[in-house]
Length: 117
Image 1 (tube, rainbow, N blue to C red):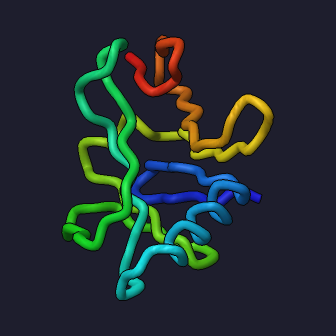
Image 2 (cartoon, rainbow, N blue to C red; image 1 turned 45 degrees about the vertical axis):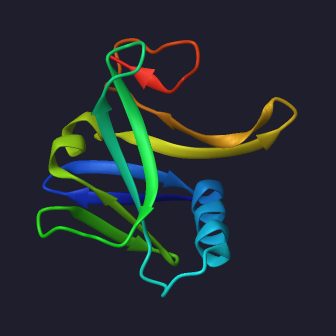
């Protein structure tokens, strides 16, 4: 099952496994329950841009916010175009556990999978 974050043609997908893990992590935080997952693209990394994900309580008026199954994902306007069609995944296997982003807009990515161009 995929959840789509949509606004004027911009789409960011979150796999059901990633959504479940995000919900677990938010539940483990000691907060007032207003946390959202912010996903952003920032300059830097070995390939030119890097992904950034963190829990946030500040949502700006121009942020794209999508709520599904208890998970709120927020994208800033500058990141929206670079993340169109991308999917947030979570895996927990022998090679380690963690989130990753599959991004069809990335022309190349580095070996660590944390940056792209």
